[in-house]
Length: 327
Image 1 (tube, helix red, strand yellow):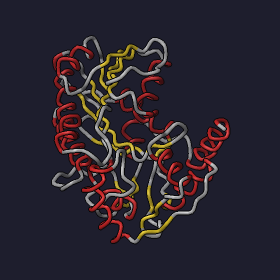
Image 2 (tube, helix red, strand yellow):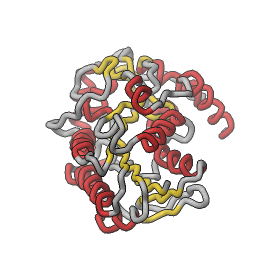
Image 3 (cartoon, rainbow, N blue to C red):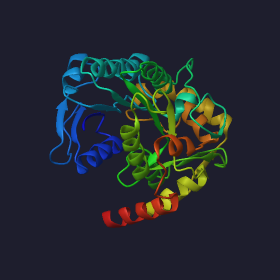
């Protein structure tokens, strides 16, 4: 089929686009800058906030996999809303205008995380009303809009990949390695919170499974699914595993949860005035690192026939080999 992929600049969505192209699908990627994508992938340089651009990019497509998003913790509400909410609305409008029957909306488990532990849960309903957590709030609104658009002519499924990592990851892996190398690695609390993650190959295959499975009469239509390895580990184990794979020291400084929350509140206000890039701690980050959040992967298996094929231990081994080859 012909598929429009938005947000292919990320490790995950770029991997999805490459996988679809490799199996013979006709792939169109819409993103703000031109990328080094496989030969044969057609690229459209544009912004999901531009409804006309999105509509034109989707012309002739059979499906849309929408992953373009404003991520991170810095920025104004308008910054996050315009990309994550308005961009999603534009994608859905483009699907209607072009008679496209399948949309996979890439969401995040944080849409259902309100500060309490999530233990072995599925994809609980997205919640809104957070103050200050603009990413999670905007993604929750976007998911609600996407799933509400599901009907007999347009099948929509929301996929929530959780903490995707692997070789080439500049977000989770890159930041941990950078901070460990500089002696600035922080651990909120004692690092004992159980957290689920997703190895990159598993995350890619889950999105392909969702794209193949979603259709108006499918059980998955109108529903959300969490994608994860289903192997919860403590935050300490995960961070240490990444440090060991990269060959950098694992010597975190422990910060009590209460202190991290208070410091995070101050950092959120002051960091944008004096520094660029993502801050080392915010209230949202402190909350995420100090509460358990792990999930039941069985709904994806039952409804979409997907299950992870690369274990965390195998993933750490592959990450170690990747770092070794880069030296």
